[in-house]
Image (cartoon, rainbow, N blue to C red; front, side, top):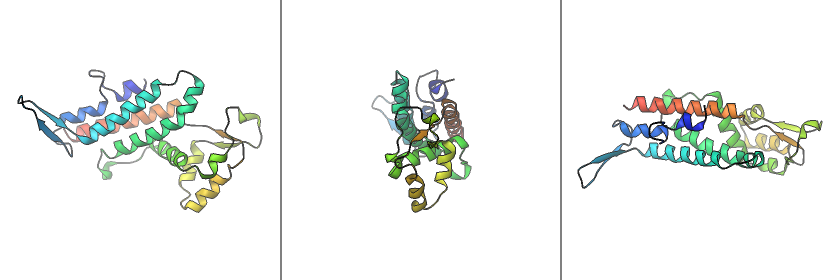
Length: 195
């Protein structure tokens, strides 16, 4: 299973969330009537989520090499966080419980959006695995980082990466696919909720 089979409708090739257009009870649904007597329901949330799904699809279709994938990985994580936020807002807050994969995307995006000392880390294209002093930045580290609370603690934590070799272990393709499955489940829940 890949991104397209998870978040894109096979019958129309539209993003899955476009099924929300068929839900007259969706919050913010507006029916537009045309001069020919036909009408169409429009749901802003569905359009916004569909736009992010399409942009993620474009990002995923761009890389043609391992280096290109690595170059776009951080951009993809930031865009996935936008998708996470839009999809989260489809469901009433009392019915939302963040999954581990949603948390992972949120924490990575938060870490990457505010670089501070990390921007001066040595994370060049080479394998730091053989260097004893290389620091590891992985999912566990960014989740722990997100729980630090104060900006002063976060700045101090990121500052430990300054001028140090850092091995960055971004989320795996399996973790990202699990995130897509979470998004799919949320979209399906929203569609069912507003039918």
